[in-house]
Length: 224
Image (cartoon, rainbow, N blue to C red; front, side, top):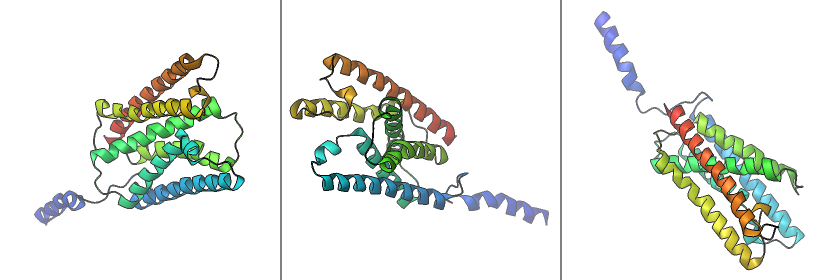
């Protein structure tokens, strides 16, 4: 009796090997569901805004998709769709790094909007709420709920700075050609010119570095 009981108890951990990880939110199914719903919400919001802008005339596809908000939201939606489709299957290091990048970019979107842009009027408040408020919080919470499966090194996550850098170069180059800039803080036509733009971008870059370090630390801490 005792030896059989011991064999049974020792076998239990082996039986759990390979089972999908379950989070405190309530399991893999719920995680996949909220990721799919949030990704759909972003796609519907952006599609609606594009359709209304086209309907009213004067819509420029290139201008619209030159906003960091739209790019970061589409990137986060793609990551969520991937997570919804794959569930709790083993994720590669590349996938975890892309997830972390989405966290940083969406936090930048939410924080910059709250600090610098929230006083501006918007055409569609519900769209604005999704892309500037709900998604930044949701993507950050997702990083806590379903943390990376392996420890990430800061020398790897520092690469998350690449996209914002490329974005600024693209924005300034295109802006000089078409005389249009998506945000006032990257507009050298202000008093202060490129020097003021450089100061603003440097301040935002410091913030992104801090978010990168914090996201890496939290992910490693949550992964245990």
